[in-house]
Length: 301
Image 1: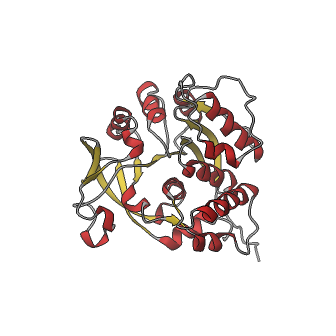
Image 2: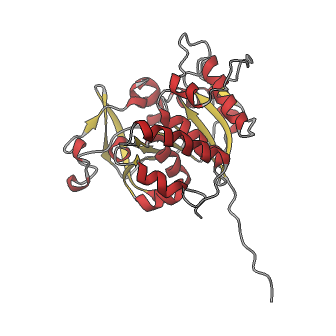
Image 3: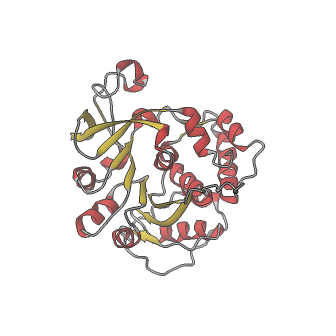
C-alpha cells in the first residue's frame, strides 16, 4: 500500500501597504507576520516618514523578519506615527537612518502574478505603481475602503447606520481621491474592496478575544496582538472595529465575504457603487463570521 501524499498549500505571497494612525494597521501587520499561510514579502507605508519606516522595521525585526520597507514620501513634514503605536513597543528607538526605496519601486520590483497586495491606508503607493510601472503584476489588490449600499445590498441586509444610503465617505479613498480614482479606473489587476458597510459589523470584543486565545499555542506575533488587545479592551470594553484585519483575512480567504461586481464611483466627498456585469472590481456585501473567526485564528486549524 502506497503512503498517502499530503499536499501542503504554499504560503500566499503578500505585500502589505499601510499607515500608522488607526490601531488596525499594527494589528494587521502582526497578524500577517505570524500567519504560516502568508509569506510577507514587503511592507510599504503612506506617507512613509522616517519615524514610520523605523518603527515598522523595528516591529519586523522583533519577529525575525528582514524584509524591505518602502515609503511614498520619506520627506513628509509630519512624523505620521501615532503615540499609541510607540506605546505598544516601548523599546522602539530611532536608530535606523537608511533611506528606503520608494513604495512604487519596491512594489513593482517584488510583486508578481502570484502576489496579493493588501492596502489598509491611502492608495498613494498603489496609484504611483500603476502610473509609473507598466511591467507591474499582481494576483489581486485587496483594499480597505469604498461603500456599497442601496441598489447593491438589499435593504434587509444593510446595517442600520447605513440604511437607505447609496454613498458614504471613505477615509482611505478621501485621503487622496486622485490616487483612489487612478486605482479604481485601472483595468490591469483585479480589485476587491472591503468596505465599511460590512467592516462596521465586525468587532474585536471581549468574547471574540476569548475565542481566539484560549487553549492555543500561538506564534509570538499573535501573542503580541492578544496582549495589545487585552490592554485595549481593559480601557475600551465595547471593542474595536476590525477594518484592516477583515481586509487581510478576506485577501487570504475570499470565502469570508460575499462579493458583488461593481463600478465604484465618487460623488462629492462620498463614494458609492453600482452593479455591473463587466470590469474587474468587486466589493464585499456581507461576511460569514465563523469563516472569518477560523481564518483570523489561524492556529485553530
